Structure formats: C-alpha cells, structure tokens
Length: 455
Image 1: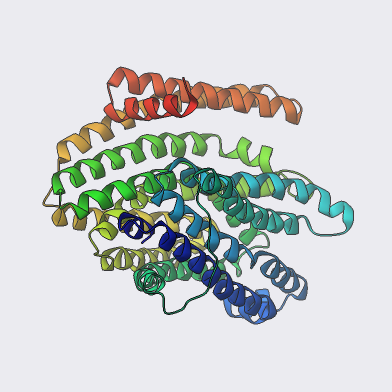
Image 2 (image 1 turned 135 degrees about the vertical axis):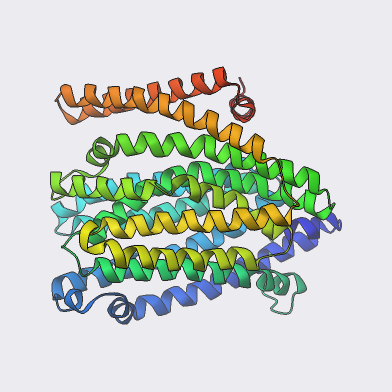
C-alpha cells in the first residue's frame, strides 16, 4: 500500500498514511495488550490442562510471564509497519535483519537477566520473558534510524475513514486468518505440554527460540527481499520473471536452511548448554531442550520455503491458499501430537509443528506450480541435490568438531571458543563445496554479502 501510494507521486500522502497506520495500530494493539494483561489469569486457565491449573505456583508463574510478555505484541506490530515503509523506500537490508534483532536481543537480554534475577529473588524464567520483550522492542526501534536516514518523516494523525487504512485492513484479513491457525497450533501444544513433566513448556519454548534464529536470519530475510520483486513482476503480468524469481528464491532458502538445520541438529547439546545451562537449568534441561530442538529442525527447510512461497500468492491476490495451508498444518500437528505424545513426550509437539510445516509447504508448492503454469523442476531438483551433497559434507566436518568439543572438557569460555570455531569451519566447508558444485544462487548470495560489506 505504501509503494502504491508513492507510485502515484504523493509523498505527503505517504507520510500521512504511515502516521495514520502507526497511530491506529498503536491504539488498537495497545488496547488488546492492556486487556490481555488485566485478564491474563483467565487466558492462562483456558490454555492449560487441569493438572497444571491445580498447581498454584506454576499457575501463578504462568500468569506473571504472560503479563510481562503481552506488550511484545505492540512492539512487533509497529515493527511490521516500519518494515513496510522501508520496503516501499527500496531499503530491504534492515527489514530483513529485523527478526534477527529480536533473536539477538531476546537471547542476550534474556540470558543476562536469567542469571541476574535469581540473585534478586525472581525466577530465572522471568528474565527470559523480559528478554522476549526487549527483543521485540529492538526489532521495532532498530528500524527507525534507517527510516530517518532515508529522509522519511511521519505525519501522525488518526483518520479511520482513510481509504489507504481501510485497504490495509481488508488485505490483512486473510493474513490474520492464517496467523490464527498458527496460534491454534500454539494453543494445542501448550495444552498438551502442560500435562507432561514439569519443565516441558520451558524446554519447548527455549528450543523454539533457537529454532527461530536461523528462520529469522534466512527465511524471513529472503521473504522480505523477494516480496517486492515478486509484486512488481505480478503487477506487470510478467509470469516468466515471477517464476524465475520464485525458483531462485526457493533454492536460496534451501541453500541457507538445510545446512543450518544439519549443523544445529548435530551441535544441539553444546549450543543449548552454552546458551541456557546456568543456575537451575541443569544438564537434564539441556538434554531435553536439545531433543526438542532437533525435532523442530526437521521442519526448518520447509519453514523457510513457506516464507518465500507465500509472497507469490499475495502478489497474485490469491490469499486463500496460504490460509488453507496454515489449517492443513494445524491438522497435521494435532494428528502427530495425538499419535506420538505417549512415546515422544514433549518432542511430539515440536515434531508436530515440523511435520505440519512440511505438509503446508508441499500443499502450497503444488498449488503455486499449477498457478504459475509450471516452472523448471529439473533446475530445482539439481539445486537441491547440490545443496544436500554440500550439507552432508559439512555435517561430517561438524560431527568431527563435536567429537573435539567432547574430548576437550574445560571451562565455559573454552567450550564457547571451540563451538564458534566448529561453526565457522563448518560454514567454510559448506561454502567451498557449494562453490565446487557450481550452485548459481551461492554466487548471488556471496556477491550480495560482498556488496553489503563493501568488499
């Protein structure tokens, strides 16, 4: 909507629309957050199993954490508006990093406060909740300098009859429906996890936080960069260019997510230990979190692929398909949880999310293939085969590095240094193998990185 208004040549109209959208969503989401904070206990009771509700200590902690994290909704909503403004200005790098701002902020602030809070008489998990809030704020505030450097300024106002605001609200409805499916998955998993061993919800949340890091760095970044390009091709009805952009973006998503999934699965235990194992978070919690993380990683490539597939439908104004895919994911998740929870425990919820995302991608892929009139499956398969071969080579190198970490017991600092060295070495091996295998998209990724870094 911002791009469309700008193309009409009315820059003042863009500023007024941006200010109107910011004020509207600040008031709307702010009111929702306030209502959520005041009614957190009711919401928690709806979302947990009766056994969890019967434990006053766990129930009280859950209510407190919910109240702490509710303002995150406000920060991330405004961050999305800022992302749209920067995209309309042709600035894609910072919006692509916005989710990484959240991941970095939530982990660094969360871990820091988790270490500090027990000394002040507060539970460590409250520190992680505050970290989530800090990450959301950083995701929002981190984009403001780029907006002002681009010479953009807001004209704050509130006009509910603004045609631009009304069109944005109409376009949001399918996206909200899709997100409601995601929240339904969260509700299902929280409900079942609350009936398992104490700590299950925390293990899943910590693992999902680590899982979201590569998703934010790779999947969301690619989607943010590809969306305006696809929208331009669709507006010009240049279907050949749209097909080429989608296939190339999908290969890039696989090239970044597959090695991340393989490497993180192998290094799950040391990564969880370095990031989380402090205070009451002991070796058992590390092992359980690592197990959940590995189950989440089953769907990492599909998660990234969905992120670059959904924009194709939005560029073609066919938003019903992503909504349908989201509800397919919910159905698969529920089926997996019901059939495996007795044997897998908390891992069933993570695996359900992963397999649901795989089903979502396969459904969307078939639909987009037909909607675009087909595209080169041979090229896609060739790229995927090269990526898989390079990822296998990297996995062998990382597995060797893991044995080195395990054979050299020492302090936490030494483990961090060794872990970082193994990750860098694995990335170098993977990059070298992709170069030797001649993946075109790898050259594109390297060229963009060199351009961004000024090399």
